[in-house]
Image 1 (cartoon, one colour):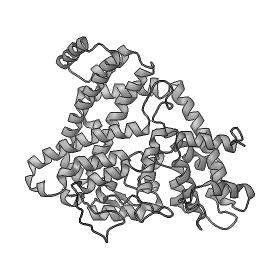
Image 2: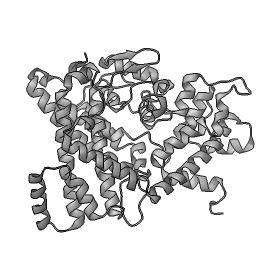
Image 3: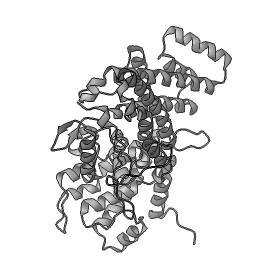
Image 4: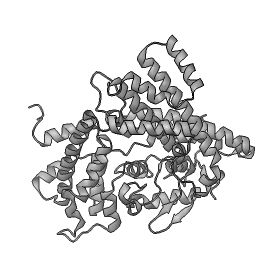
Length: 448
């Protein structure tokens, strides 16, 4: 059974041998939050697609605004859970448990840091490049005798943004300090939604860490007392706070995608109101309609409805977490918190998901950006992987020289060189990737 005293640790990854007495009021977990906010990978999220193409005249969500909103919801979930647990177990007041809100909000900020350009189509483009595209040749022994291990190959064919986020936060890139972002163990563990290796990913392509970061996760999991479920391949039970990070993400993407779809006129005002009203009983619906008679701006009405639904889902997910706390701590809880909410909101959430799949995620604008992203990423991967596997070519040298020195593009091992390529490409914004694609194809030349 996992326990809260061990699960919440302020120890920093990469700085285990150092301990500084700090003369400031911020807690270590608030420092994690601030460190993420001011980082370059976080800033780049403003030019990465959430669902809809980056804005023209209508400002929809990008990865940055999504992450900030998830962080706000995560803080509320964490604070509500901490307050309730402390009422049950006041002896935990002297532990770090009151900091759960800060930890979850920091983890929420970082949950999408590893996502490549062009949303989930970017992840699929990377995976399929290796599983069915030109990268398939790397499965065989190379002319120089090198060959990827079975687990390394699984990493490439199941490329996962969540595992990549853990790498960004913990990996020592060239010229950088040991421990990556040097975040606290608990914040790092709270990000890993799928705490197992890629060989256990199956068809869903969900896993938590690459081969290169397996030892790092094992170290963190051991320190925090996460339940070990399997040693080879490595699998742990989730850190309990992962459920809150996941719930915050589930709540936000569902609500905000519907609000964006309304702004883009993919959903009518009546359709949108109907979807969101369905979360509430008749008495609450009547109260909402009274508010609409006072506030008659359509966008403001939808925003008010959306915020009301978010409040309801926060209360529901908090209740589910507290009711199942012992299962969560024992590693036996199954599914997400959202899957266990009450019947009425569960039905409304399911209906929203169905409408989103049919009308939003399959809309022409969304599919167009996915098709374009697929082409851009596949092309860049093809050229860069060719460059690191055949560096003696003149064109390879030109490409390699364009890559930032923080990426170990000339590493001795093939897997490390390919990882460096993926670090470079997945770190790009949509705009940068498209610009590089055009330059490489000769569609856009620098001024001469």
